[in-house]
Image (cartoon, rainbow, N blue to C red; front, top):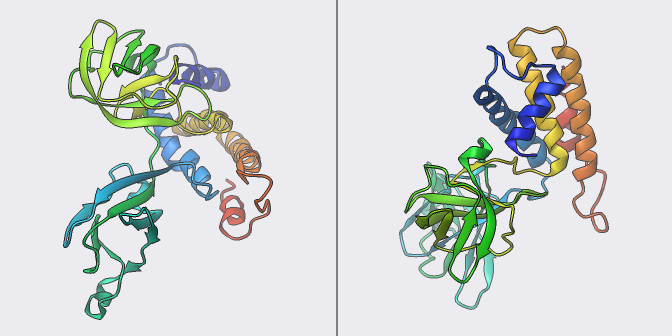
Length: 290
């Protein structure tokens, strides 16, 4: 569902009028983005199935500092690796300030940057992290692709938002499940009519996909099975703001929906994964009933 469809679904689910003084479409987007952070993203992360995994590369140089990616959820790393000239990968151990006198091999986290121990002077540093899903915006704030010219790195779109100008960074987002981030921080080279030239066109881009300002999207960048949960959670938040008596019932419906979605999404690979998990996943829902 795109944001227009999400808003429509929320209005129907909550019996909200098409237009009212209590909630505007902008207000609904605030609810959806809040819910993405507090309900949907944590539910997916707890599965430990790497749905949001991205990698950012840095060229290693001695005594350099490398900033954590600004898209990283919680400013956290999934893993840190060094790749040598032959392509061999080595996962690094995290070190702490108390380890500095011991000349151990690994990396330190200093505020929101990475420092490597003294033994690393060449190669490629690969930061693996979970990227925060883009902020939901109206479809009118994005451009939907109608034609693709890979050779000239341009796309024709249905309409061009006024914010799309040269040098602006944009993301390409898939219009269909699983609503993947196809390319990010891709600069606009130029705009001519409804033709937009980019620095590059991502592999797999299809007609119907979206070009958006960096860190924004008109579709929730999570599996489609989570979209109804996004609507239901926004409904709970909306009812709570109105002190509506139905909030308790709808909150219990939300928790049941989340449990069913987890059963669908976990495990991600059926033939070689363990379906039953203990610890963090089981405890996630047991403590969240209202």
